[in-house]
Amino acid sequence: MKQYLIRLIEGETLTQDDTHQIMLNIVAEQYSVQQIAALLMAIQTRGVTVDEMLGFRQGLLETGKYINMEDYNTLDIVGTGGDGKNTFNISTCSAFVIAGAGFKVTKHGNGGSTSVSGASNVLVEHGVKFTDDQDQLRRSLDECNICYFHAPLFAYGMKFVGPTRKALQVPTCFNLLGPLVNPCHPKNSLHGTANQSQQRLYTSIHQRLGDNYGVVTSYDGYDEISLTSGFKICTNYFEKVYTPKELGFNYIKPEEIYGGETPADAKRIFDAVLEGTATENQKNVILANAACGIAIIDPNLSIEDSVEMARESLESGKAMAAFKHFVELNS
Image (tube, rainbow, N blue to C red):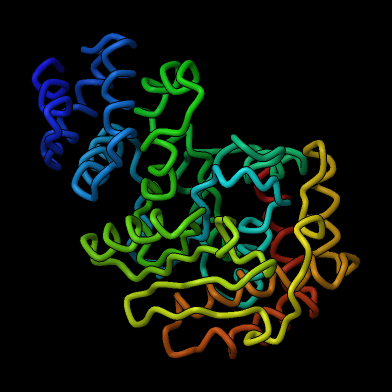
């Protein structure tokens, strides 16, 4: 570790091979908590590079569990988190709308960090039990068009940096790694980032990975399409700024997508959207994000056209049917 820290102190960046080896060494418990903390803060102070992120990602995937879904064309839809907005479970709810529209979703997620309810929290509230069994996950994907990867069951290496990250109490590059280590390496992804700097980083990473991607950020700091402001999307094919009006929606107020004070509060909003009893603006946020995901997995569709597919999935009850079957199968 000493050689890496000296290089960082002298203003150098680390190579992909460097951070790959560092991650392997962290999992092998070759470093002290103090050394890991010094490394993370040195990188955070300067700003993490694409190569550094790719090396950490490679190490996490190598030391984690892989799930083979290569024969499926699937999408992951997930935000980086850390935007501090405490919205309800927008990405997770959108995932079931996408599944209801007939597309395969391999959703990766965890418990909430800066929000009351992360993806895993809202699923637990419904009695879902997480699994790393490949046959069960594939069955869920076949029957419901969606399966769920609870991150701690797959990215084993994260637990070796957990105590350090908790002690530091500030974000590090590991806050950005979660969406990049989906254990089935999906062919398509829609990732939300909290600011344009993170969006540029993620776009560059996806360009290096060569997958089919969309990276979105709302201009007022949400790591998803919030409809509280305009948003920018970067994909393999185009970069474009949208306003809510261009998708057929009105601007909304932040409190209209607030997730509440407890996981139970967030669950009630999540259920209301799928049941058709949510407010119009809660519903519209889900339609916007689901439509964006559909447009990523099927590049022949525009986001505008995909809004109607998402609407049909939600209003016909197909999204709710997918969710009910998912809960039955995974409880």
